[in-house]
Length: 201
View: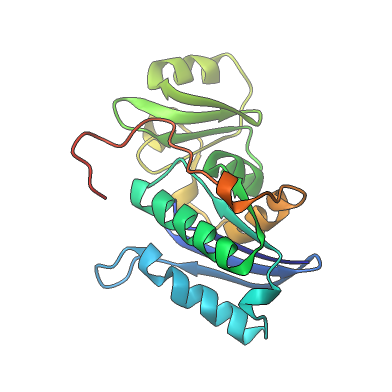
């Protein structure tokens, strides 16, 4: 069983290659020379497969982050996964960035900036959607939570910003994708709220 996992929804691009339970390669790519990290996705995937002697047709499962996150990143991630899976006749697995971050950081509350004074919220593994920050503050005040958020929300909600620590995102996607493979046609982006008016990517 060979799984190719990648994520362009967050602030960096992550890619991992796994075979029979063993991680063969894991990469993290940042924005470079005014290019958004997703611009390096295809070249990075080719590189890690070539370095490990894995041909595209050997891939059994493509696992990706489906959001929430950057609208451009979500589209890139899901589109590449669907096209590859269609061409390679393999299965896909889509996993929420909230679930990925909660698992990678071992936190029971994840809140990511959703603009308009709200956040995408996941509590104890359950995605709550886009929730107003005041409501999230009440939830935090009335519970016992290990909080993971981003640079923008950390001063408001406390906890740790995922952007300040190194997390095994690619490896976590691989682990979460096990036993989730499905037809590529069912892979859809997770847009909890629509893109801003006038947004063109």
